[in-house]
Image (cartoon, rainbow, N blue to C red):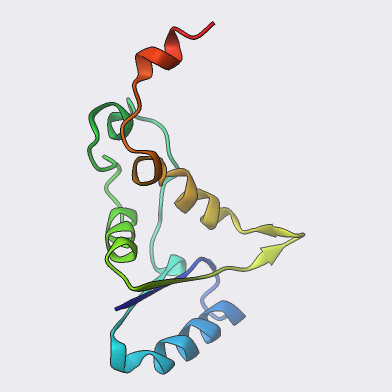
Length: 116
């Protein structure tokens, strides 16, 4: 199974055309395609960081948890993103900021708070 994530917020931009071509190429292997223009995602924050303290999924109820699940169960994850002034688009940073629990697991907050 392959997972394609199109980070572009523009419905008719180049990224969707690229994603469509890749999906056609891998259609026999099974493909999950996520388009950021189809959903509204929230950045990390406005919570008590339960994902870090208690090792639970992000409490923000949007499609990002489903994306992470698909990526982690895929044989290949393909990220397609526009580049603005030599930087990835903001949607990528939203996606990336909420991967902390996946990448690092639970963190002992007391060690961080007591550091001098």
